Image 1 (cartoon, rainbow, N blue to C red):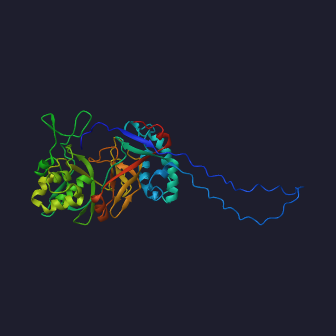
Image 2 (image 1 turned 135 degrees about the vertical axis):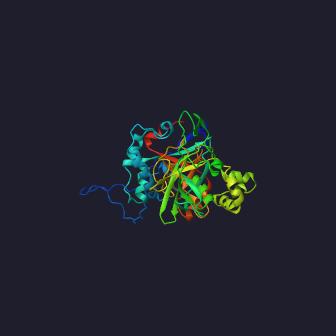
Length: 408
């Protein structure tokens, strides 16, 4: 994982406006005299009845959410399963557990009322919208004076593999090595050599066989390029040669900084910056088999996996929801918090304006206005995640009690 850097200035501006009062009805008729009381005045000549003036409809009171483009078009009920998974976890933690870095979004007690008020699973879009507007306040996220940033996508890859190595299945997905020393506040990731901590093996050294005695292959797959992208995504499915499906999740890394392959190929003159995508990188690697491993080795970071019976799971520890879970930088955005996106159109999808929940992190997700949208598994997810590099903005949804206390 990349090393931490100093925090960027972060500004959150509450998005609030006072409810607009309905206009008064100036044409309303005087109230009639009480029945049984007669007037002593001479009645005026009877005039032709005047057509009734239509009474203006009472407008819907405005709310802070009306400033969010697409808020009323999103089917917010689709985001409830993701938030429910977060709430199941949050309701089990102590009330004083900080939410976000340094308690940026208060404590768990500030959020538990909203979690307990979650609509039932069968709630429709209207009920979900009423719940969010009643339980949260939207706060615009900005950094360095700008509320715009880069938003990418990721997926749960699908690979083919076997428990047994063969001529077809010869690319290992390794479990955590026995000699891997994980980071603590006192030291980073590494391995012990004669009592001293040394950097762990790089990707190139691992590809050359450095883990033969210290790491067990969980499974062997048939495509080194797909194995490389599995590391970037963090979890995936491997269909075994006997038809069984094995799910693997991120367990640890070798501690080296992540180097994006798109940048490497741009520097080589192999790809134009505007053409970089998961699809274009994969196509270049497949078309250059003699160079592919050397290019992949330019990224020294390497990921180790563990088996799991659960679906793709994020850093928050909950199963991700396709289209509604997002990876964020936890130095700025609290894991578990709802976010509303307003992103530039993605071809075939249109503008991405939807409610998501921050449930994951990523080595390349750095900055206050930066996100990585989880698209799920399958061909559509591969297509959308691979092409997504949208500019946009988002709003953090927090309980009202927290919005007044947020400070940076």
